Length: 170
Image (tube, rainbow, N blue to C red; front, side, top):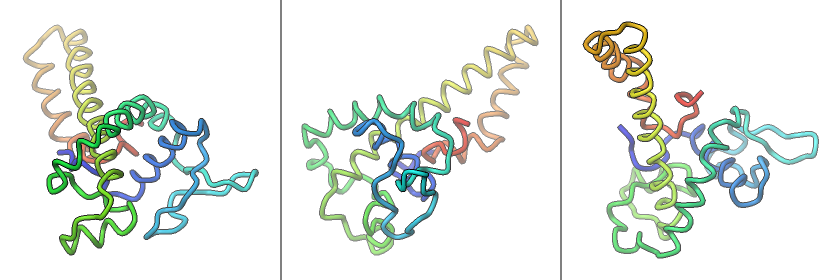
């Protein structure tokens, strides 16, 4: 269910916090969302802005951001400009998405595209761990499998798999 980019403002705040942690070693976010100033950020006692979301997911995203930044150095995205989804809160991304206008600078969208694979990993691992736990508790693979299918497709796990985990990882 992943979009391959970031569609929600809370997910963009999570991403920017993780990027700041990866690049500068701080949870302080240096810039607001361009189209929704102040959303999801609170001023700290030091005057800098911090995410109002828990830091667990940001910490877990740091290695993936570092890997994605390393991959992006090859500029692979120039060959696939039309295929990379527009992240709605990068610059005027939502307006570009609605108008069907490709962004001038595709690199930040490509970076978010690569990092969004984290969603797939977390949802898949969660479903497998849930299956294994239920199998141990019930001693029945059929029962555990049935309940795991309900968990994966009948709970909020499925719709949240398309976000940058401001909810599912928590």
